[in-house]
Amino acid sequence: MHVAVDEYLVTDLCTPELRVQLLDGGVALVTLHRPEATNALSLPLQAALSRAFTALAEDERVRAIVLTGGDKVFAAGGDIKSMEGCGPIEIMRRHTERVWAPIERCPKPIIAAVCGYAFGGGAELAMHCDIILAGEGASFAQPEIRIGIMPGIGGTQRLVRAVGKFNAMRMLLSGRPVSAPEAQVMGLVSQVLPDAEVLPEALKLAALIAAMPPLAVMQIKEVVLAGMDASLDAALMLERKANQLLFATQDQKEGMQAFIEKRKPRFEGR
Image (cartoon, rainbow, N blue to C red; front, side, top):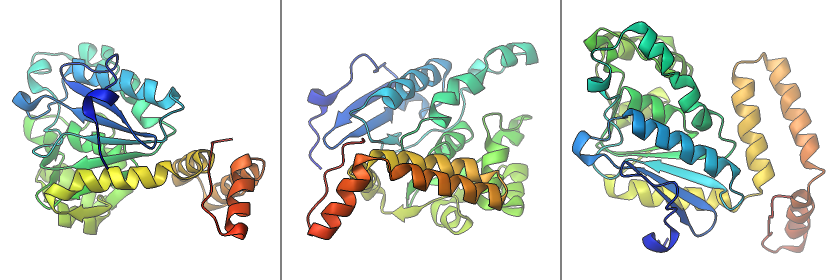
């Protein structure tokens, strides 16, 4: 995919610590940019991510999002210097759950392209995404226990849902990192690739998803996430209702007609 960086830069969402680009085909590329701090998730960077995902969720041009930290590191965790002298009330007043909510609730699929470290908050950020592509040199960890705390942005809950109790406990209680291949075996990573191929493959996959009917994409994501914590009967009911709803869309008519006519469909999200 050819990317004309300057042409597609979304300047009103960019900060010194975050870059947002709109690419051809309905793909947005969000890049963490704190190379001097291994992309540690400072409060300004978290706020910028929150604003960016709020805007991208509402932008009808965007159908899929790729989140990356570049080819060296994804994110090496929270900004410890900003937390070292804090008390519990100050930490509570930061309301990180509100800051991260636009990522958690984004209706559009998010692909994490992970190279290098995804530690602490970086691993939690990756787990907010829907698909994780990792480089062969990537590693994942929840090392908070080593500094006397624990994950606070969903690390204990999303991790156990992704890899099961026993693998999660090993990571959480030891703080030790796991390699990308091990993370894939555990169920934390969707695919492992050579480091140089991670971002190109993520953009290629995002473009493929962006070409799908947007309403069906959003319904699949919504039902999968809602169904994870529901009973099987309730989750199957959600699936049936969402499937039935899609038969009211123009994209369903277009998709089936194109299949019958043996041509490529054109989906418009209607």
